Amino acid sequence: MTDLTGLTIAEARDGLAKKEFTATELTTSYIKAIDSADELNAFITKTPEKALEMAAASDARLSKGEGGALEGIPLGIKDLYCTKGVGAYACSHILDGFKPEYESTVTQNLWDAGAVMLGKLNMDEFAMGSANETSYFGPVKNPWRAKGESVDRVPGGSSGGSAAAVAARLCAAATASDTGGSIRQPAAFTGTVGIKPTYGRCSRWGMVAFASSLDQAGPIARTVRDAAIMLKSMASVDAKDTTSVNLPVPDYEAALTGNIKGMKIGIPKEYRVDGMPEEVEANWQQGINWLKEAGAEIVEISLPMTKYALPAYYIVAPAEASSNLARYDGVKYGLRVNGDDIIDMYEKTRAAGFGSEVKRRILIGTYVLSAGYYDAYYLRAQKIRTLIKQDFDKAFETVDTILTPATPSAAFELNKVVTDPVEMYLNDIFTVTVNMAGLPGITVPAGQNDKGLPLGLQLIGKAFDEETLFRTAGVLEQAAGIMDAPAKWW
Picture 1: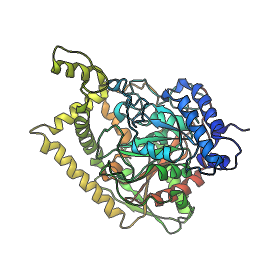
Picture 2: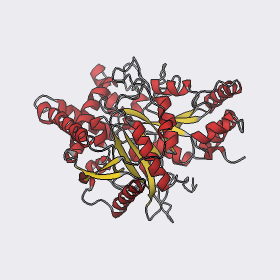
Picture 3: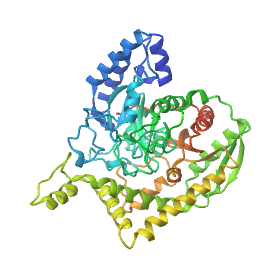
Picture 4: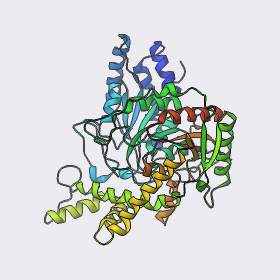
């Protein structure tokens, strides 16, 4: 039998249906792969007993012909999602020992579809980071290395553990979340597919909040088809999350027709930024050519507010974070550092519990919300956000989807000394506009640079039109070819 971890979700689903192997055999293969990949540091919590128990239940359902859409498929879960009885720390010291007594809506949807949980995946602390280097549990290593090098590279963030685990074949797919690019950027760095759905498509209930008006759940998978299968099961309306939208969830897999003839693809001139590497520009042009060859019409568009998106995002997101993270005080759960009185206990707990990047963003957020600065910063950023949305609304009057680079570079070296945090924030330059406007965006692997590192392209769609994104992404994937797994060194 071939190595079962090499199968996509679609292939594993078909193999299970034909009884070529069992869910228990499939799950066991992944458990062995995870145990031999500690050097990547992708998993912070392994749940092999739970996984085998869930796999056995899947086998029982499959034998009766009662399998769900993801029956027996082993998944990794980003540590941002609350999972009943299994630690959910958002990779922060301040949530030490926290084991929820409830299940997030998205993970419950996946278990209802028959999926198997392999464990919890590493991430930037509270999803704040673009390299997966702010985690309390240490950085994740990208399974990809440059040709002829043994230098470790970042997997991107904040969903770096999810992207690395999928790329390294440690899980069939993974849940992730995207506040400013945290699904799409790591997917681009690891040669995987990541989709941030429209804000409201997936429930946020049971996800540890970073910035509530920007956070959105989504999958990272190996192929566009696998991402479509995952999102179908993850998405739902939820009475516990009033921002989730009561719209039917389409069969995204059925949207992969391979036909984009006559479709209009927008190319925003503002995304040609100064200093963009030649390889990123060439990759983008290659994507344009592929879509043109498939029968799409290429239209140059303008998104003039793009240049203000990053500064506006880094006001709105920290402001919401400072409000959301006020609840971590050492009283009800997680870390508690004793003090002389309750104020001293709060201060000592938060000082010890939060990492430096989280503290930086709390301070920025508290500052922009403070009296005298609220109008100058926060209110102005929200106005910019409205203008960004209007840019997209205008563009979508003439085009069906928009093609851009996913990242301004390939994966960079781990532990690269970044003294200016703005340099790190610039990794989100192509992705934050999508969150600010609440739109869906997908990253597809579109080749490799001359060092053999993956490069990704991003497609941006109309609100709740993920089907068109999947259809177009499928055409890109077909032209580029499905990316092989990285050469194993770990």
